[in-house]
Amino acid sequence: MNDYHINIFYSENDEGYIADIPDLVSCSAFGNTPNEALEEVLIAKEAWLESAKANGKPIPVPKFSPIIYQVA
Image (cartoon, rainbow, N blue to C red; front, side, top):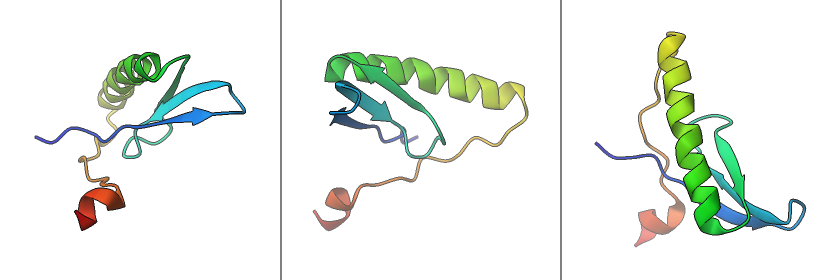
C-alpha cells in the first residue's frame, strides 16, 4: 500500500513550518522545524484516520502525486 503524500513548507505568516496531507481534507500541522511539522502531521494523520473510522466516514485512497513525480 502506498502511503499519503506529505507537503512541508515554511510559512512566513506563521513563522514556522506547515505540513499537510492533500488526500486527507484539513489534515495539517505546525512545527518550528520541518521535522517537528512532520512528526506533528503524522500524529494528525492517525487521529484523522481513527476519527473517520469511528464515524463511518470513507478513508481516501492515497492518490495525490506532485507534478514533479509525474514528469520524472
